[in-house]
Structures are given as structure tokens and as C-alpha cells.
Image (tube, rainbow, N blue to C red; front, side, top):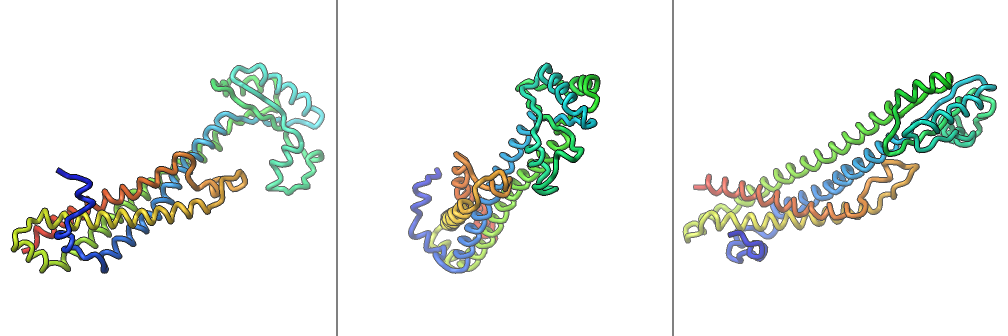
Length: 297
């Protein structure tokens, strides 16, 4: 029966089979640390893009815009008519016309801060916020077309879908990166275990002569490489977490690039990386040890 305490404590006689230092030890520690470091960023990318997709979806799904294009003398009248339609529409929680300063702020990134809004034929924008039930988009469009000829409703669907789709694909890419990191870790540890077994062929032969079973020899390799992978991954996770902490905090101006990190209880997720690295190392080393010992004469 597998006992974790006995596995961690090990067997002093069996541990002599596995070199405590050397190329294989360094390779295992370095590869586990590097993969742990990269896994922290892949995990942070997945969680950050998940939050981004939810935020974009919620923000754009609950807001719409009514654009009024009309001659200068009719703008005010049509704006009032549109607001009256919106206020009497079921599902609309709030509606307000944007002031000139707000419209200037929206155009400033493209035209600069000195844009003469008052002298340009810029449409009047009305911000529409939905309630939890939402409104009938097609019904509202028909009402606006009948009562406010210059009003056009934009429910942000054409903007929302590509943004949410892009964020969802980035999240998928992050999880795929974690899978590839795990597979790479397994390959590196398998190579290191095979090298260590090949380098200790004579010692293994002597152990067999004195009655040691292959399971006893394999357990020594599995234990040593599992603990090395766990320790290396832990060091990589610590380094990666520190690097994440040094990134700029989330800001509206920076958007996604300044929000790449962990929030709240999500900080517990990196703690699972060393455990997963140990599990991967355990399985990879056990498979490699059994195969190599079986092929040995």
C-alpha cells in the first residue's frame, strides 16, 4: 500500500542507486523550475482572459447606443423624442443623452483634444442601459424608426461578439499552453530518468544479484525524481509569482495588458503547479524505470 510518509522519507539503501547530483539532477531541477515559471504565466493568462471575456460580455451586453443624425435645428427635438421612446420602453433601465464634453472625450483619441464639437455635424449619442430582463431590440428599432426618423439603435452586437470570441480563444490558448508545459515536463523527466538508469547499470545489476526486485529499484528512482520535480517546480512558481506581482496593476487605460495577474482566491491556483509537476514526474519516471529495467539483461 502506497504511503506518502514512507515515500517522502525514502530508503537509504535504495537511494544510493540514484545519483544525488550530476547531469540528471540538474536537468530535472532546471526543467521543472522553467516549466513551473512558464506555467504561472500561462495560468495567469487563462484567468485574466476569462475575466476579460466576462467583463466585456457583461458591459457590452447591458448597454446600447442610439445615434441621432438630423439637421442642426432638429437635433434637440429628435433627442427629446428618442428619450421619451426609451423611457417608455420596457426593459430600459436608464437612458441619457451624452454631453458635448463626453462626446469630445470619445473622439479625442482619434482627432485630438481641440475638436470643435459645436461646429461639426456630429450625431447626438444617447446611452441606453438595460435592466436584467433586457428589451426587445427589433421592437425598439421599429418604434424609433416610426417616431424618430433620424435615430439608429446600435446594440453593440457587432462589437461584443468579436471581443468575447477573441478573449475566449486567448483563454483556450492559455489552457493549451499548460497542457503542453506538462507534456514537455514529462518528456524531460523521462529522458533524465533513462539517463540515470543507463548510468547506473552496473549498480542495478549488483542489486539484482543480492536479491533486490525491480520494483524496489524503480521506487528509488521514482521517489528521487518526483521530489526533484516538486522542488524545481516550487522554485519556478515562486519566481513566476514574484514576476506577476511586479507587473502593473489593472488600470482602465491599460486594459488587458495591465490586468495579467491573479486576484483574490485565484492566488491559490499556482500552489497546485508543484503538485501537478510531482504527479507528472511520478508517472513519467515510473513508466521509464519499469521499461528500462525490463529491457536490461
